[in-house]
Picture 1 (cartoon, rainbow, N blue to C red):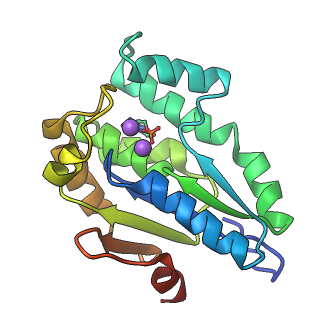
Picture 2: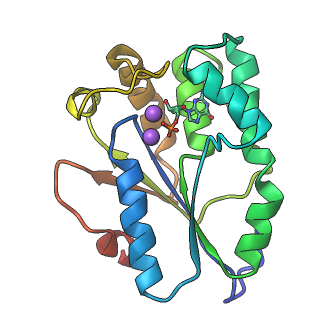
Length: 193
Ligand code: DGP
Ligand code: NA
Ligand code: NA
């Protein structure tokens, strides 16, 4: 989407994975690593629960409100759209963005409920395309063992198994790197590969 690959433009790096895959701490490690290299870098996450739309999403995830599956899908997408212009200006001004979840979560989680994949992808069209997507590959069983789930709506083993299958169907893109968490790894290897 951002075709202007000028040297000053920041990179858009997305981390994806199941709940409890370790994504949030890996985002933090990558952020520190790139900062130490002297890059202008910010760590973002979706859903961004600080906006009005984000608060509706947060309430839904906490099971405090109930919404049609299509309606919540569109809210997650709207939450990304409302940050699009800021994201674009950050990238253009040279800031690299590391994002904890993006459109792929939208498609993986909603299609795991049985919604049509193409329908799920449609509202994401026109959002900024990542330069790199890192998928932290962990088995749903292993993720479930990691300190337990926090009790939000999607944090159930049977559902996470379906999400894992949905992600697998999305992973064929060249911008994806699949990282197995069964091995110890360093982001230095991913970024340099
Ligand atoms: P997190 O804040 O990363 O724990 O994400 C909250 C939960 O919402 C998590 O179970 C993943 C899910 N999620 C994230 N983005 C989307 C999305 O766009 N659509 C749907 N349906 N679920 C999402
Ligand atoms: Na979560
Ligand atoms: Na998370």
